[in-house]
Each structure stands twice: as structure tokens, then as C-alpha cells.
Image (cartoon, rainbow, N blue to C red; front, side, top):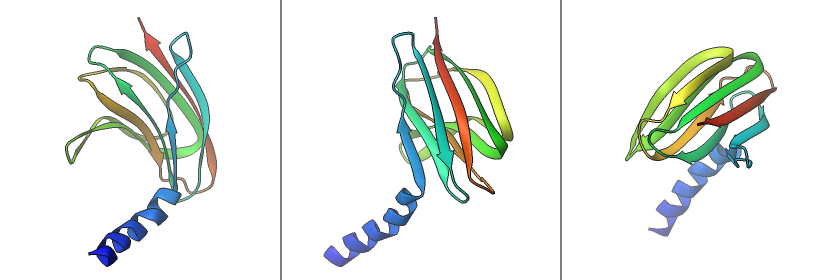
Length: 122
């Protein structure tokens, strides 16, 4: 039993070490800005809890096309209301239900920096 648990943990560790996981910390104006690092074959992800009916204006820019999505989890299922493959993006997320939402980037062919802004709309 202990060997199986340890093997499971060791299988997850290399994956976790590849990611930059960033919690979104809103400022007093309901805005969050960051520059995220992404390395080849790794990903960057910024997550926050949102309520149904909230509107979040988002924009990001990188130097190269990246796989991008906004997702949340329902049990074991992953729901992706937004996904694309581009070097930048901008839109407004109309939050469909109370959930933890994550903005995620992957697929970098060279190290890159992603400039991200999220803003709560009235």
C-alpha cells in the first residue's frame, strides 16, 4: 500500500515541477496584472474563485502562439468555455456558475513571458 502511494506521488511530482501555478490576487479596484513565465513543454496557470453572473474582462500577450484556455472542473470533467491557439487574446468571460476558473497557457516552443490582465466589470 505504501509503495503504491509513493509511486503515485512520484509520478505527479515531475508534472507539478513543470508548472507555474499562480493564484489571482485582486487589487482594490478588482484588477489583477502579472507576467507569467512559461518554458517549453511546460504550462502557466492563473486561478481564482468566481461567482455566477460575474463578468471578467481578460487580455494577454506572448511573443509566440500558445495553446490557451479558460477552464473549470465539475467533478472529474474539465469544462473549457474559452480555448484558442494564438499569441494574444482579449474578451470578456460571462461566468456561468460558481466555480474556480483557471486561465492556462501551454505549448511554448521557446521560453516566453505572458503579460496578463484580468478585470472585474460592474
